[in-house]
Length: 399
Image 1 (cartoon, helix red, strand yellow):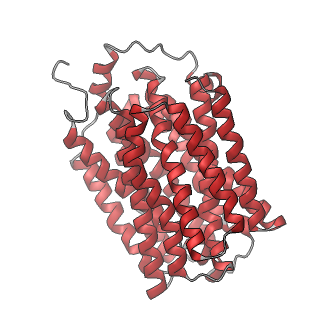
Image 2 (tube, rainbow, N blue to C red):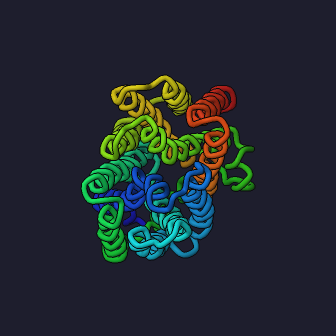
Image 3 (cartoon, helix red, strand yellow):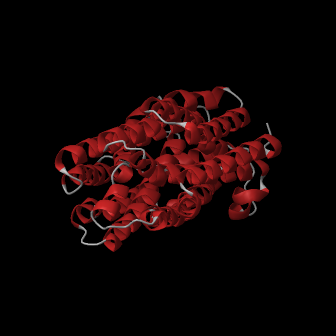
């Protein structure tokens, strides 16, 4: 036990490998980010926004449930084992996206992708927190989410570019084959489990254990509950951005390459920004960071209603990305700060359950509102919910 040391510097090699693995995880989501709504309309003649967004609904629900079970089983079967299993579920995804004969196959691929993301991303998050200990949690989460979401942005841009040059299928999804194989082999042969680091931290932690991890993380605990509701709303507006932004831009007359640029800027700023905001979460008041981040998201989404030019969408996507960057590593660092080492994986799993249900809720809400009242109305509605979430943090969360 004495040989186990906590800290970023002490565990930089394993930490770096986990950052790289998480970039591969993020890249799997980026495969779909800019072109799947176009595939629905062009190749499968699906017009209803709710039907198009069905792939996000399924992805969000499956990922959310998988997050929860990743937390439950992290201490029982090991973080590394969950990571490897996650990649096994991810392997078929690019092949299905390349050759799916119907939209049902695309939805099925997103079920597998949801399991892949829930197990693999959750595992890398928990393992990094295990390695670094208390001191650098925010920075660790910033690096983790930076790698994941920068990969989302890069692959989203690349798939948009490839689709514009060579067609919607199959070529954009060849990237996914390399990502899935690389992620699986790296996880099997290079990653080590971190349960011993949990045992080391447990020996000196003074944080009390939660009496009911699910209920307290969901709402009863003031800090954990505030973070959980904000996480849900954050991914709710991300689900809307994922499904509605490409459709909105297409309606406005932008081509696939332009859509790829706009849809990539948001996760790019989100990803790069976390290099800075993660460290900010270790230095500044987490409540203030969360409130400002959610407020910026609400403002950016509301202003999308008035945007017309390409430059408008680029600027607003950047603001939305920065607001998200402020909250994402801070969410996870706050959960870690408020949980005992033995409760941490389970509590993070509960948080990520509700957070990623936001994808499904956002897709359902925005699809229904967009079909009934128009795309702009759906964006304004989500902006309002994001604003309410910001004020819940301001009122309920302890400093």
